[in-house]
Every structure is written in structure tokens, then in C-alpha cells.
Image (cartoon, rainbow, N blue to C red; front, side, top):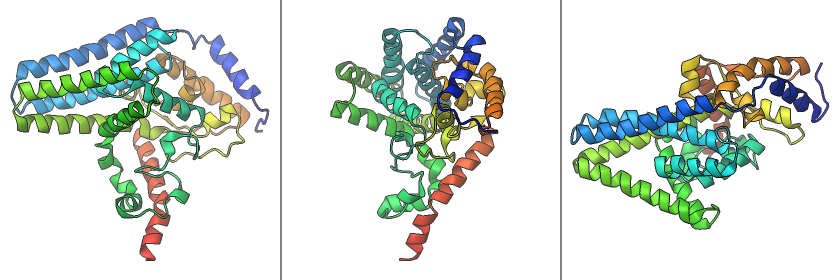
Amino acid sequence: MTTTTTGSDFAALARRITAAGLMRRRPAYYLVRLGAVALMYVGGWTAFLVIGSSWWQMVTAVFLAVTFAQVALVAHDLAHRQVFRTRRPSELAGLLAGNLGVGMSYGWWMDKHTRHHNNPNHDDLDPDVAPEVLVWAAETAVGRRGLKGFITRHQATLFFPLLTLLAVSLKVSSVKALRDGTVRRRGVESALLVLHAVGYLATLLVVLTPLQAVAFLLLHQALFGVYLGLTFAPNHKGMPHPTGTEDFLRKQVLTSRNVRGNWLTDVALGGLNYQIEHHLFPGMPTPNLRRAQPIVQAYCAEIGVAYEQTGLIDSYRQALRHLHEVGAPARAEHAAR
């Protein structure tokens, strides 16, 4: 039988999670993880300098694309204060990882991601489902013209190609946020973004030929965007949109999807494959999510709340199917003209 008591369901689950010790910090894990990602970053650019002007740098571009995505996933954990208890060291490390490391405003992304966590999949309140290049609700698909209309009609087919532009989109959104004054540490963030851009472009132009530099930039940024997009795409796309009447537990669980896998899946997706547990307990350290998963799943079964879990490939299939269905009104409208 489904429990309808508002608020108390999450409190009962939280007591089980706390009793299991799953909200405790994992400093040794993050020491190893941050050290490994830092080693990848420094090692990748060191290899770039050693190899010099060569088309073998395309291999380096692939490696650094993976590295940049892993840095971004570390910034995600920092934003949720999974690494440090207090705000100051979390923000400092986040600025270094986001702004200086990968060229994305940490303050802008943190504000956007916080709003997403507060209202996942909400048509009006979640910025991740706001109608922009892609649309996630059928009612916003109609009435689009020109390039936007074409993309909407074919968005399922274009989804993966469009991910190649995600890294550029993050940079553009970062600059807009800094220009609009919506970022709290505007001066610091701007300086770090400029330092990243100048250092990145100067390194490419000094070491590579102009043609090699352009090829490296395009491949590196495109693959970085694809990888980063693939870590977030399975989590909510194609899941129900809340009505506004759900309590906290249902709002988080019913809009999220877990991805089954092994330790490699955990590493590749940065723990975001445990999306349900992460949304319920965003401050939980990443390595504890795997241990929390059976507790949360069993509890959801007890109170009659649907718990969605699928394989990685099927999660993308569901997201693409949803995009195709959402685009149907746009295709019908275009055919009727």
C-alpha cells in the first residue's frame, strides 16, 4: 500500500541512511580521486608538450577530453560539499576545477544545478528542462520556426551531434552570467576564465601548427561536450515531470533514473548513475551511493514508490524516445503547413 504521509517518509529513510553511516565524509577516497584526476590533467598537458607538433596530438585531445569531463565531475562533488565540510574550501577548489581547469563558471553552474536539484524536471523551475535548443515538453515544441523548428522536429536524431557543442555552450553561458552580474565572485571568476582561455589557446598555437591547433581544439572540445553530456543524459530525461503536489521524497525519486553497472560505470559517470540516491542525499560522498542504493530501493518498495533503474544503453534509448515523442507535435504542425 502506498504511504501518503507528507514529509515523514523521507525522514524515516534519512534515519536509516544516517544509522548506516553513509553521510560520513570519505577523505581518503577524495584524496585518491582528486590526486588521480590532477595527475591525469598534468600528465595530459605534459604529454602534449613532449609530443610537440604532430598529428598524434589527436590522441592527446581524446585523453584530455576525458580528463576535462572528470575534472567537471569533481567540481560537481565540490559544489555539493561532498569533499569539504565548509563553503570556503569547497568554493576555492570549485573555482580552480571549473573556471581555471575546464573554462566553465563554477558560480553560474552551481546556481543552475541547485535550482535543478530543488525542482527536478519541473517545466517552469528546472533550468535543465527549459526549452532552449532542445525541448522536453510537447507543449513547448509547437510554434517554433527556422533552425529551432528544424532541430525540434529532428531532435532525437540530432541529440548526440548537438552534444559536440555542449562545451561551447557552457562557456557562452558562463560569459553571459558574468556579464549579467548573476555570479557572486564576478571579478575572480572572470580572471580565472580569461587565464584558462589565454593559457589554453597560447599552448595550442605555440606547440602546434595552425591547422593542427584548430583540429585539436575542435576534437578536444567536441569530445569533452559529448562525454559530459552522456554523464547527465540518463538521469532525468524521459522521466515524469512533477505536478507540484509531491513531497520531497517522491519529487526526487519519481523524476530520477538509476543506471545499473559496475565499478567502471561508477568511475565513468562519476557516481551519477546512482541518481536517485544522489538527489535524495546530495551531500552524500560518491563512494557511499552504491551502498545506499539497496537501502533506498528497498524502502521505496515498502512505501509503494516506483524506483526506476535500467542499463546504460537503455537509458539513452529512453531519453531519445522521449525526445522523438516530444517533437511529434512540431512534425505534425510542419506537415500541415
